[in-house]
Structures are given as structure tokens and as C-alpha cells.
Amino acid sequence: MITEALLRLTAKPKFARTALVEFAALEDASRTVNAILSAGIVPATLELMDETAIACIEEALHLGLPLDVEAILLVETDGADEASVLREIEAVAAICRASGARQVKVAKGEAERENLWKARRSVSPALARKAPNKLGEDITVPRSAIPEAVRRLKAISARYGLPIVIFGHAGDGNLHPNILFDKRDPEQWAKVEQMAAEEFALALELGGTLSGEHGVGMLKRPYMEQALGPVSLEVQKRIKAALDPVNILNPGKVFPD
Image 1 (tube, rainbow, N blue to C red):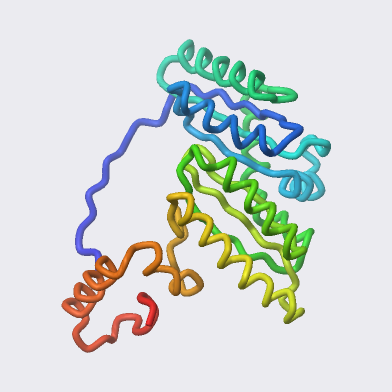
Image 2 (image 1 turned 135 degrees about the vertical axis):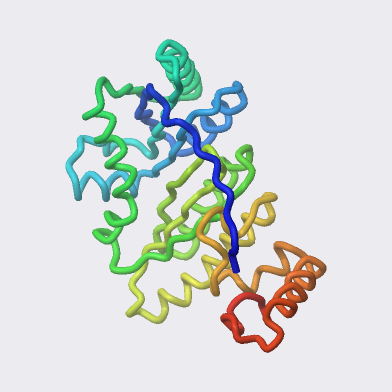
């Protein structure tokens, strides 16, 4: 129950530069995320999209995205001073090239920049072209663990024979591994449940969390104790009991039995 909210408003940045970075190898793209942040650069946005996401977007929108790469990064810097914003995007470009980027394209104007963002915003709906159903998750790992997380997610996909599309807010360590499948096939749904469990397990093993922004929900509920520990869960249950002594607020939905 929320009774009050305190908000802090920040001014919209006056200047922004956006770059699309192509990588022949997904491994190089995931390593580059950490290289950028380790250099002390904190972009306004640092997004990762793998080859399946790129192909689905391009098929749907025909934006001219490269189809012969394993990954792209979408990087944006912004601020109140145009010269510093430009220096920062140039520094990002240099790091990307040193980390194996095939090409770095900096948007020349607002229309080109908007096209790049249109691509990122279209990932989720575009995946419908690949399969009738998708399970979209949002595990979060330490940013230094992104390369390992990406490798292991692709290994899960290969082991079960169902695609896992990887995209997300890589600058925050927040990955969205989407499992593509057909729910009409019971065998595929059984695989999806096992794959999701492995995704959650690897996030926790790498020092991450079950969710970065979507919340725990019912699918991740059985893994809450593993993520938070029994003491934390007990405290939360006592708070729930204090606020809802007769258990009428969303009963049975919050905690694992």
C-alpha cells in the first residue's frame, strides 16, 4: 500500500549522440559493455541485441540493420555540453573498435537517431515473427559477469533446442533472455519451464538477482528463498501479516509455500 511518493525531477539533457556498434561475435559485444564502464564512462543508454533480435526487427521494419553479425550495441551519451557529449561518444567508439567491433556508426541527425531507437523499441513485438509464443525474462547480473551469462544462456538454448533471444539494458547488467516456443506443443512448454529455472539459477550463481525490473511474479516465486534467504522471507511474511492480518490482499501470490 503506497500512501506517499517523493519524486526528484531532472532536466532533460540538451544534447545526445547515439551510436550503433556492430560485432561479428556476441562474446566481443558482451565484453565491450564491461570495457566501456571500466573506462569510467557511464552512457545514458547501453543496449545489447543478439542476431535473432536483429533479424526479426529487420524483417519487420526494414531499417537497414546488419544481418551478418552476432550482436549490436546501441550506445547513447547525453549532457548539457555538446563538446563533452561528443568526446564521450568518440571515446566509446574507440573502446568498441579496440574490443573487436566491426563498425561504429554514429547517428548524423535526429531522424537517424530515432530510427535506431525504433529498432530497440521493436524487439519484443518483432519476435512474434519467429515463434507464436515467448517467455520474456529479466535476470540481472553484475556487469562484469555479462559475458559469462551470455555464454551460458546460449548453451541452455542449444541444449534444449529452443531459441533464447538475448537483448536488454546491458549497462545495468539487466538482460532479457526471451525463450521462443509454441505453447500448443506440451513438450516445448515442459522444456521452457526447465530452461527458465536454469536461467534463474545462473543469475543467482553469478551474484545477480531474479529480476531487474519486471518483478518476481508467480514463475519466479519458488526461487525466492534461494535468492533472498529464509530470514529475509520470514521478515517479509511478518510485515505482510501485520498489514493484512486476515490475508485478503492478493492471498497466495507473494511468497512461496
